[in-house]
Image 1 (spheres, helix red, strand yellow):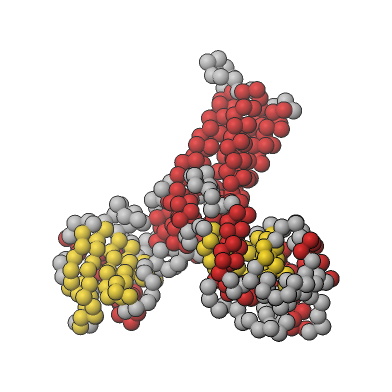
Image 2 (tube, helix red, strand yellow; image 1 turned 30 degrees about the vertical axis):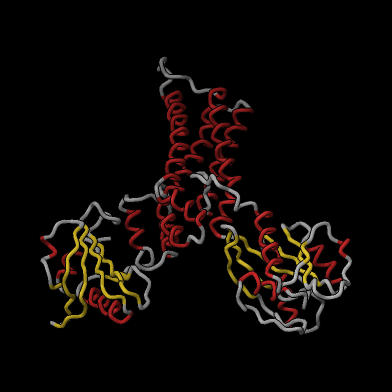
Length: 449
């Protein structure tokens, strides 16, 4: 990290303003080479300066340059931000110029990676940066905000501190048994501590499924046999003509996707090929793909045709979805009734072209997910898959320790599982980490962040 990096930190589009960010020991020196205005090496930190970027004695752009001096910066390095006009061409020219005069093009997420490696933030805060950028609802933004402010770190550190107290006391008892004033750590003393920690971790893990949905949305598959109106339903929910709609069965041969926000819940909608027995090779591939989508779906909107009696294809679909979180929609209510509605315990009778029916479906989605009704989101809602996996590891280790205490195992044996839990919690914060994992994590960030 001895070199100085540069990247465009705003969207590369024709906008009013763009920012080219430079970070490293030579950031001020490098920008100063091409900045016509105040001598940036002599200005105070956290100040803005008007001037021009010069390339080969020619004015490239009129800019505002902001100087941030180490250590009170995002990366804890010197940072210079060039606020230029937001044209794609001029922004790229300034980026190229910075590289020519000594900076290196930053890797994806390298600014945040440097903030982490320099101790400015922990790994949960680094991941929260990307969560803020990718937030699609108020709830997901609020969740990300807790991580960004260090609330997740605080919870994990509290767990670690309690475990560390146990570990240290056990080690003192083992290594220095002559210390009469030291509390003798026994299985009976440790049991309630372990039970309390396991209970708190379980509370977070129970919420983690809801947290995942808040963060990533619900994978919602629209399933049914051909020509029941799945694509029309998708278009109605999206309020746009996303999928091709015809009266020819089998028109949709591949998945068509779209994203909507219903009451604070993001639905990743997937319109699938109709499921039926077919000899058409292309359609058969689409049917198999539909079944795969169905297996991975969080929510299924199961569609039937009001004008067509149930057949074996319908019965197969009902069987495939019986253990799924599903909403049954009987579509095309404006046509003659030929479907036996007694086959369903609960259903919505709709027309994809009736706005009120679509609103009823949206309300049904809100009711069945129940996520939009959550008002008290707090720091215990953790939706990051890596963090949850490590928290599960820590919880499992503590369960093993608890079982050992029940079997009256020696305290030093119990300590092994407690140590394992402590290490897993440290991995959540990035205190014990693998370089390859760290590199992969930050590679998923956008350039300039």
